[in-house]
Length: 399
Image 1 (cartoon, rainbow, N blue to C red):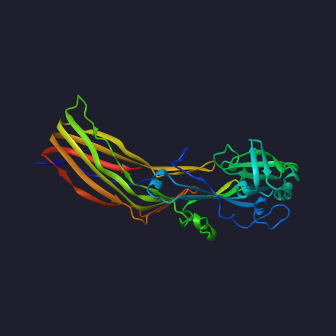
Image 2: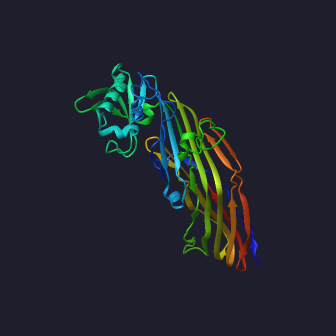
């Protein structure tokens, strides 16, 4: 007769967030379909109405965009993720993006302390002289020039330069900028960063992509695949001095579905005003079907726990701006004893999450709002292929 003092399988889903140096999903620079908001000239007025010159005008506000796709998401026809970094400068600072007027440039030379921008024609050069001359008017005036990926020849992502003085070489049509290569956080003290499905307008109430009529091509959700079959090797917990043999396998173990992630951060004059992280599941489920083979004559209790799989939910990295990477760790623990005889014991459980589940974390309060995360559980009856007397406890969890 088979006797089980205890045999149970349980599951709980907890997400553990940690800041990492890198993340599987790395965003790449993406051209904006249109400059964010209204064109705002900081000094002077527009001198021409030519559309290809308007991007030479210094701005009080601007917006930079990135797109990214992880290798796993790409291999499963996933959609790219979208990130927007909207900045607002101080009173004595303005910004221009060289990506927007790259068609007007003949060459660009950058060092950590200077920029030399050579224009193709005289009209573009003269326009730049008039639009940028205010930098030299007052010592504290600063023009932030953002170089796009590769525009300096050596930069692998966007790089901002803080320009304090400009000389114009009429003979070569070159603007020579005295500049300091900078970090984003050092030149922009007020900004909004949106990643994935977090909307700026409803940061505490919704998780949807930014809705802008002229940005439809960027209205992508950050869908991260959670399809992870676990090809786990068989684990043998026996040792020569043991009086019993214990082998654990998990041939029918794995997860499927996807998660949508979002991140939002708003900073005003160096002070964080809002910071939220959101997570929603789509068709997420896990199958755990362990098989335990044990034999011997053992009167004590033996316990062991180990990780089944460590699965990143493909966090994201915007070079120079943000590094964030969540992961889920699945582990399995066993406790057996006493044991008399030999047999194979197997069971199974299917766990799924409702698509209506949502997790919102206010990183400043701190405040966590979550709903619908109670898993739907379907268990299979225990199967035993022989007679045995044993106390067995197998437990699975995710953290």
